[in-house]
Image (cartoon, rainbow, N blue to C red; front, side, top):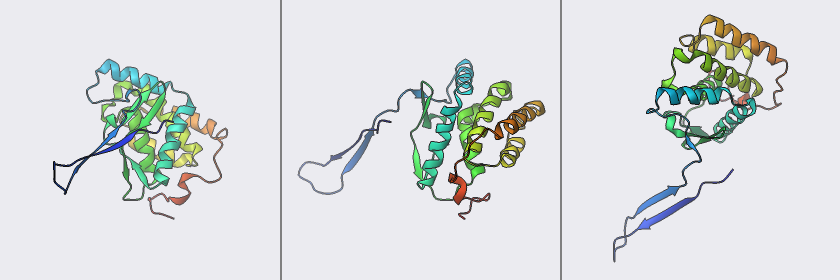
Length: 200
């Protein structure tokens, strides 16, 4: 990937030495906002469809990149939908912070899924499209070494207001079948985290 261009400019008053003002200029991320609060309903629905139809490898990369950022002692800022850009199936992170508290897998799982579903934009009206995204994110976290029972607990307790019982059962049945096909690495980003987020 291309590294963003960073530039620092110093502006000093004429004939004075003292405090200066600096500017950091960064290239705009490629593409457009993944989601934005001002999106029209049809635009949101279209983007949901695009994310739901992404190949599993694209979601896997997004999750893997997210976990590598956490491992490096940083944290993705998921507070705004505009912190993520989308271009031809690729999702770019544009706002990282220093991580001040441990992050457990539940927190990471929820953040990733919420970002891909459009944060506060999501609605039960689009439950079929949201269901596809949740299933793909779940599969990615299984590949990262998260037990299916822990994924199941999050889905059934956190998204039961947008998914109906049949959809939840469908997700879990598909993941149970896929579990045997998923190859997990020997060392996963979760080796250093416990369920409560404390460092092991």
